[in-house]
Length: 70
Image 1 (tube, rainbow, N blue to C red):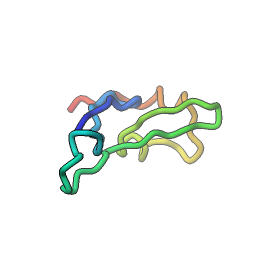
Image 2 (image 1 turned 135 degrees about the vertical axis):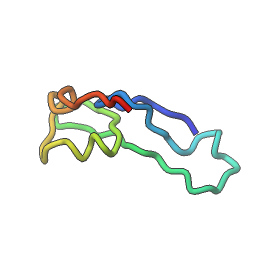
Image 3 (image 1 turned 30 degrees about the horizontal axis):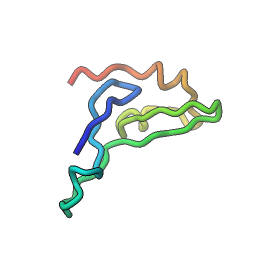
């Protein structure tokens, strides 16, 4: 399993799949997703950050998310 940083809080987010999981049938999941906004920008966010976004988010809302200290 690999990780990518969340564009909101900066935390490392696990990403299932790829060569590391080729022969594994375990229940590994991705802990975030890429969101595409109306302005054409894309941001990879963890689920905790997605929950903090308003109903119609923009890139400015992503930039305003607090960094995770954990």
